[in-house]
Image (cartoon, rainbow, N blue to C red; front, side, top):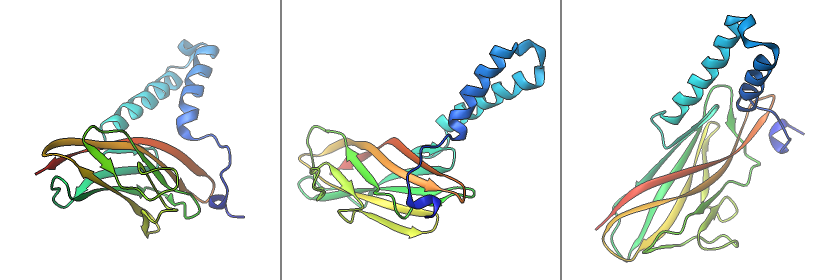
Length: 179
């Protein structure tokens, strides 16, 4: 079985940074200024991820959410959530990608997943792998009236390297101008 075919419990770099910082404090962080500096470097890296230029960023991936074409009140509109794996990571072909849309006043979601109209998934053919490093989820909806609508939700994803797979949940949203 390849590392991507299963969903192992694993420790990622995101888990190690806080643990390393706690270990430094327990050992007396004043003893080694270089080690203390490494802990602050990890905190700075986390701050950079918060403003990465994409809809959401992780340590081995990023997400871009965008409306797809024009959106007219009463018509079917859509947005795309694109996943791009970075570095030595790739898309996990075995993972059941899923997007659960948040309730939005004046917006009806048009998902075909058995879990409900606000769920979009690989099972419902909303997820399409583009290549080894990227894929996209299409989220269809209908806006009742004109104006600006914030459409968002939680995207469940997985990216893998030769050694490990990451399972993530990321909140993404996009503002759609409905005419």
